[in-house]
Image (cartoon, rainbow, N blue to C red):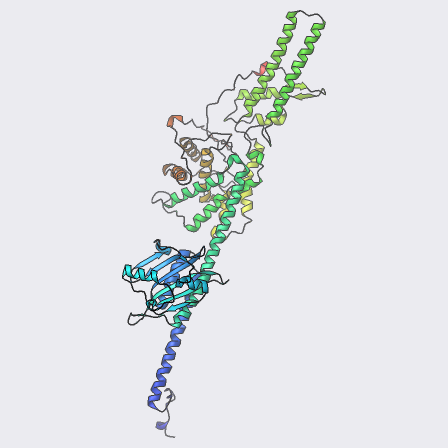
Length: 603
């Protein structure tokens, strides 16, 4: 065969040898190819949309994205997203390009329209109730639904609502989430309003299904976070209510901590200008603050409630009172027996009078001892040395009970408690209280916190750590202490000092609190920058205005007591929580305290 007569295999073969038919078929093939390419592009775009929606965690951003993507998909001029709530369709997103309207979502613009009742005469309600999509070419040319509201809107704004596509949002469990309404699809070439094609309807239904699942996912995550936070608050409230004298402490510390964190976040200059708290870090700090005292669930309530030195599950001063009453009766009985013996001997009135006077003096001595012990049983800012020695002397005094057994006026355990120099708790009890920080750390480390809140155990357990390493539970120092732990150390102490619900101490004024905080910062217990921020930015006052009803009035400068020059790593505040001991206040003298020399060692 001649090479010049061979067919060119590289050229496409004609579909028909009839030229007119070949052109027609070629046009059909091209249209099919274009449709397939367009459909493939839309499917790929729908897949990309699904991935985009699955990565969003903010519900407002997601809802706005759903309407934006649906409108972009169909070239719709306007769109409305309703969410089902309380058996009504609530407006969540309203968009209209022609009228330059964007309401709801991240725009922050409030939507003024009332919720839609599930009445089948309303097209969106009809879709929600019956679970079918509705595609209307022109709302003015149908009597299927009541379009009074859209027509009124058109009349008021000059808009012309024409084509409408309304689809259902159902999640993977077939639960109704909401309704998506698209308005006025536009031709890409001419810009004229056209009806929504059946292809658009199918694709939007697919998008709506993905959107419903994405909304359900975010709602589920938010519900889980709310559930966890509610559980945390319930536990914290239970711990607070365990001791009515500290009820509300955890809540107040949490709110004060968040107020201070917000203040730091808003700082534009100074040492904290580069420290910010985003939504996740603020959530992490809030949970840590609510859980900072969770270890107190193991602290015996009689220690947390110890408002007097002899208190355990009850105040043992009653034992002392009974003992003193017995001694009084014993002295009185022995006096009567002695008087009876004198009468039998025929003693004169002078001798009988001396006997009565001795009995009276003996009873008065016991009453003085009783009152002195009662005074010492009350919490004090410092037990004077003379009182300490007097208690030691009383402990050496003995008496004979009815069985003839020799017993002390006060037992060794009572002596140990009564001679507590400051507050109401012994060293052993204080060590038990300090264990709550370690228990908090150990308990929280058992919880598999998610990545965003993984630092909660370290933040919560560090609120008793000191910069110089003298704190607990781990003895961290300086930069070893997390910033959030340093922050909570300030707020925890400030709350304890200002609390007015503790029977064993009075609430301090802000001036007093500020002096204490500054002294602790000077002694390298607290972070100086945080203390100064707390004072200078009036964080406590801001917290009071935001969370509490009755702001505490500041005292005058002359009302502030002097501060001790030395630091002792024991608690002043008597609520058995903070390692602070920096106040030196005027001691109230005991009423008519007897001298130790006046007491005999044997009654």
